[in-house]
Length: 469
Ligand SMILES: Cc1ncc(COP(=O)(O)O)c(C=O)c1O
Image: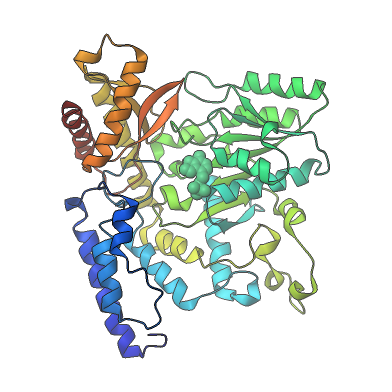
């Protein structure tokens, strides 16, 4: 098993690809989720520490009979929970090939062609966003790590020795920003929550008020984080306006585009992102709206040399000897990780194999699905929208006729029970959000398989499940 022959590898490959094709080919016939307990799954797994190995068929049997059925089917067209990509078959093959080569993208000399592919694909993403030619960055494990890296660079740019640093972000910002502030020693309490308008976008006037107030009290404002698609509702903050405020107070502007930024590829959404190219850094997640399998996030810096000052570490065992500048390049100088997998291969294969045109169309179709859901909800007398739809996230609640005169608490409690019942039913999957202190059903269309018909089925599922409560 450790070192199969080329013929054995061919046989294994056939069995694995057969399983993959069966699984993806019959996805719509599956439930997105089935109710299960941890105990039930553990009971299916042989707990003895394996001293002798078994053959591949035995391993695939467990994958087929236990791992697949006891998983949430993230590639299903009605998986609307969280911000979950479906993955693509092409990228699954890319991951297989990346692990086959097992390149370790630390420095250029460790993986010359893979490093060039990463630099190339990062540059394509830079161009997609309209950033300056000198901008650069790298792939990381996800949006959380990208936010952490960018905020570390932001601190470097300002005054890394101060213990009175302050960072600004709207109250709708993903928790990874506060977590980064805590990990970097800035402190969660020094992330100031800026108020939002009725579209849940950051209010620039409140940003100015908070910065001015902090300056008067002797704090050191250093960074503003703007959202290009909030996790709750998909709101895009007014990026150009925030850039102007950042300039006025000499703040680093970081954009968290983990969920939404790739929607610049869709014509109908592009206008929302005006000014994104003026940010000092941006976090993106190809494992969200480029549909790729986890894990691949991305951080891009307008001036990579500042990130270098934050991350470079000189040690004899990492000293690069006898190389020209391009070949002396080290990713560890620009981010927190040393050993790094060959994430760029799946990005390169996707962009080159599918092309921006088709990707833009798929994103456009996701936006259309969310807008269609909104129009059906607004036309109905038993559902109501809770937030506007800016991108592909929709927040709403079910208010059947018999609940119409009930209190807000009773309607919230009913929707909470409905969400759990819907998830257990398994035909469609939503998650939840808290908006203005109220409970909301929340969905996010992030799958090129999802159709307008799936949005109709979602509402039918909710009505059917609600009747059984
Ligand atoms: C807006 C936003 N930022 C950051 C993250 C964190 O991304 P990751 O899960 O890749 O760390 C998410 C995840 O959903 C997100 O929606």
